Image 1: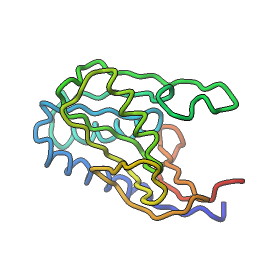
Image 2: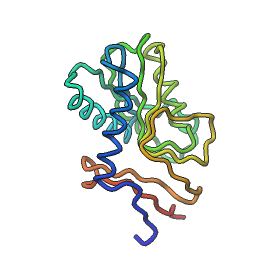
Image 3: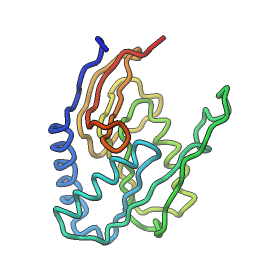
Length: 182
């Protein structure tokens, strides 16, 4: 497509993930009181990549990793014309009094993150919640949510969409900015 612009290619994506991991290590030390939660669906892929890279760097294999579905916590789930299909939540550890690293691929309006916070509270009350996103779309927030860890920041307009493509699901690792189809 003509109007696509690559924000991060495969190499830049790998570097961003490594950098984010080193930032996490600086703040979480040995991860003994930290857990990672990826938001379904695309944040889980990033969370798995972050988790894998953290294990490589730190040699710690006991960092808890889970996935969290926000479908029924969204404020717009009843407004859709077609039935929605929930993803799987998998949290087989306690988040009570833990430092939770909440991970999503793209932060735009903040509504998915708000839903994630609500969904997470069903599993306990964390001591701290930090947000890690691969792409922060600075303009267009509907809620006062800001990430603690950012892969890259872009300025975009409402008629554009950021799309994270992953090797696991799309056959390629890249983040692109594209025009919304009308």
